[in-house]
Image (cartoon, rainbow, N blue to C red; front, side):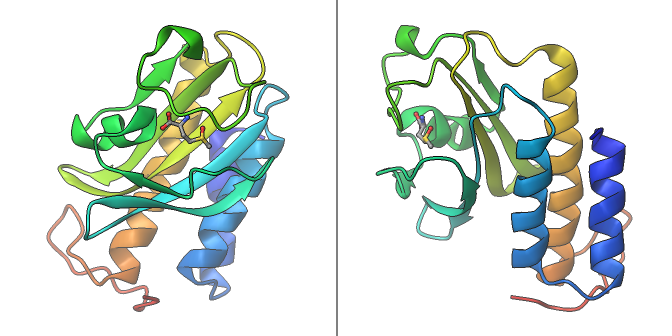
Length: 169
Ligand code: SME
């Protein structure tokens, strides 16, 4: 499935009244199914105490349910406000291992400007699994989810209007 197809399905769910949790879990499901090299796909949500908490995921259970900002690849992405593509996790000193089979990892922030809502985290059993096209696809889904977060929290959208999709949280 392409990013456009995934976002189209999410649009349809939203119109049908789905809440944020359903939208997040569906995005994980579609993203995970969209690529044979995605072996673990999940969303960490950023809470006001500067801790990432694991939400919806597909793949083996992980010990890293809570990750402080600044720790691991996931926490570093938030601390440095940037997406991180790790072609070989064995080369990263602060990597938090979820599974010994993971070889590469991609973290894409769900954000609007400096406001970070969470992140999409994907692990692969293959080295260098995330080519530029794949990264763009995940970024597009993350961008869609940022809009869903804004709407659920009643935050102003980029054009200044308050999103009116209803407060789901
Ligand atoms: N590897 C991540 C931890 C999350 S697991 O991959 C699911 C990190 O270094 O932050």
